[in-house]
Length: 417
Image 1 (spheres, rainbow, N blue to C red):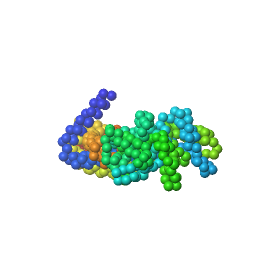
Image 2 (image 1 turned 90 degrees about the vertical axis):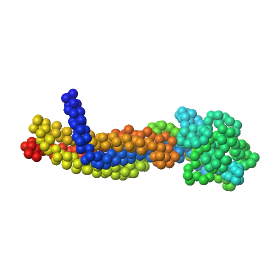
Image 3 (image 1 turned 60 degrees about the vertical axis):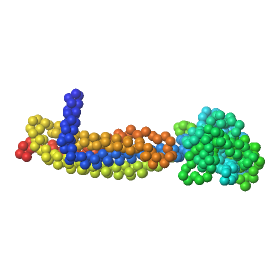
């Protein structure tokens, strides 16, 4: 064992010395290999960031895996009893010990700004919704337990809303009036960054507080205001559960809520999060770019093969002398191949280091993430290992042909050379 290890280390050191002697010849080829390894490693690493960005974007719209959606409606066209539905929902959540569950209600509130009163689209949710949908907060905070118990409704507004208020310091507890000049007073506690396409104000508020506000407001005409009312068919219910429990819980939740509401109601429970499909939407892109990187890697290896063949031709006399002093064909084969392997591994290390610096740079994070990624993944170890493995494999392929040529050198021909 020790003899084999010593022989291996000796071959590596010998290969390194030969590379130092012929460094000018192999430098350009090794640059190509390093660039190709950097490209291959960067593609894999960026793929992880892009996938994370896609996952977070999907989770903000449809929830984290696995999110179950529950809705109910009356089969005879009438309105479901909102209190009965809420009660059935609360009992089901408590029965199965679900920590992350939220009601979601689309509503609208009249907000007086300096430029006039604007009907602001409102999502009324429960406190766990922020974690379930990765809601980003740029100023202030998401709803807390203290906000739920406060007498004044709490609001989390988008940056467009905040800009129209004049960007007040949230530490001063800025207030707005809900439902017109004589409506309820609400406190802004947080700000979410608005996407580039968002030009209108929007806000979140707690579902229980919205119900209280709407109960205190005059009855609205549903035909005039599509957001009027709370509960019934407009209320959506969501729960975030472990993916492995999605199928059994889906059936159990549907059965329990259906039993609580009776035969006159139809209960639907379904998943919409991205993980239910099990496909990688960026798989084709990663394969295409990865294939291009492999092609560049092979071109770099081709140049290294040509240089290695020229070098072996010039070392025929040296190889013949080694054979005459007892060097076996296997030792010569291994020594010549190791020169290419050591060279490409060294180039691969440089390429991986360059990829790490590139992928982890703040500029790349800003460009790739587009401000949508909150949890940037660390540089994937598998990407670095793939780059080094590719460099080693290319070195072995590049060294195979020169090593075979070296083994076929005859001692008598080498001495005459």
